[in-house]
Image 1 (spheres, rainbow, N blue to C red):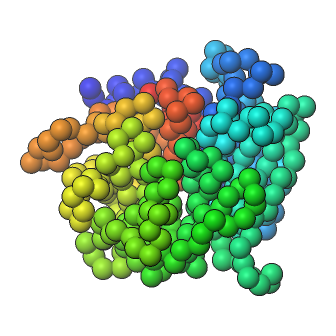
Image 2 (image 1 turned 180 degrees about the vertical axis):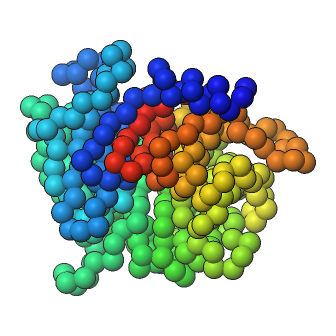
Length: 347
């Protein structure tokens, strides 16, 4: 399929755009289906990226039938510093008995914060989780991931080289590990007690909470000390991970059974890649987005040919794409954030 036809096809009836008053970065889909909302209404959280203390998180309602995105002013709230990540509770039914609310939202920045979205259309801060030994200083959190199997667990990554595993129901630290030699930029759960992280030290490491003293290095940057910025673990096939390098146009696909050698390198972006997301309903598809203002969807072949892999479809945005989410709660849509826009693309 020619790129031009694909792009125009996607741009016309197959994208929905929300214009924010401020630059956007963090984006998250809710997996909750609240009784107070019709089944084709989906909640999406977006976070501002303003380089000062006062930032905002807005909650939008996406109507799949009318293809509209509307903000809910009652659920908009101030956030200290730009949220580095937003994530809704991954499995609301798992702990619905424990609380009466319809949804929980987590955010990272200076601390890990939990927010409760109530059925009466209001939002309340639930907790601020801080593991700093001194109150004056906290090492900023670069990212976090919410465990889908053990939903009381959230793992955070920090510039202080650590990963911290929180029990959010008790509000206590389950464990804190010095995970890398330099800043940790991202973290992803594989299963209940296994997570992986990437760092400015250029490595992907896997940790098992049953053996906290050891970690397995799965990959290291070919050029020493080239930071790895993002990590995505394939939830449909846990043998596979993807990572991206700083200022690099490649997406590196890893198979944890054969460490150090990537199984594929996707090299069709024309500028740095900023974000990656595996398809929630297929183990062979991944989306990437970057500074070339393009979102590319790839199908990984069983065996890569000599000339590399071409994307199966592409979409051009108005400017550099900073963020990308592909959610199991809305698998037919990919969310991208660029400049002050959040756009949903129909896959």
